[in-house]
Image (cartoon, rainbow, N blue to C red; front, top):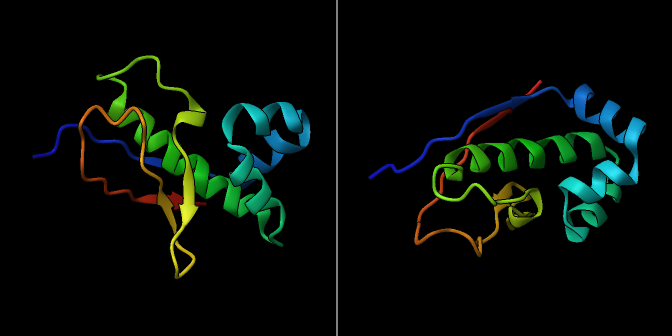
Amino acid sequence: MIVGTGVDIIEIDRIQKSIERFEERFLNKIYTKTEIDYCLTKADKYRRFAARWAIKEAVYKALMKYDETIAWKDISVKNDDDGAPILEELEKSHGLKRWESQFTLL
């Protein structure tokens, strides 16, 4: 049973401009320390940040009807063994056991 749907498309340039303009304020508001540390070690860091943004935004959209207090840092993204970004387990999952995510980077 699908209980919430969230979809997001993000332009990598938009995330890059936000990071360059607001620097640590933006990074620390949206991303966990683990996410920041990971992305900053990569040559394509803006693409990595954008992927995490898209996943966070999609999850946020899906969960908003259950919890309006969910924050960006409540949603954390890591990489699986093949390097693909995946959603970490959420503390505020409201009993939801299965997640699927699709996102597009432009």
